[in-house]
Length: 180
Image (cartoon, rainbow, N blue to C red; front, side, top):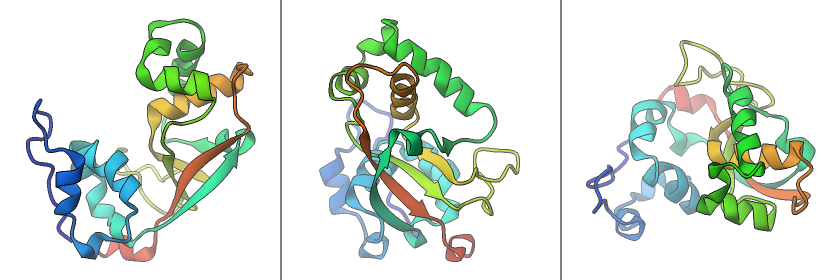
């Protein structure tokens, strides 16, 4: 399946999302528009280099609401979760990370500005950014590393504005993904 490249990706005048989505093929319509925007368009180079071969257009997507306890079940390969937890402390402790636009939103509203993307039940799939390491069960983070770091920091610190529910995209990676 041919995913359209983001024109001038990485340049100051990179293609705006609306223009990009106007070129989005119907054959890829299984991917929700918000995921196209926040994952594929925004992270085009990483998506192209690591994720296309897993055929995300064959995945099944569902918008769900997670509790804080469910958020803490989201895992990542290698030492990434420990690194995200260290980053999370910086978001809630007055460090410069807490002054980013994303952090200000999250620290005020207690949740993500846009949902993160996780894979559910993907322990049979090799993570494309690893040396043959399988994705984590029950939930593997795909997109939203900074947002998850910030929220984990808020959960671990019992931050005052912490919401109890968070919108998350959950993907199921089907067998077709390996064939496309």
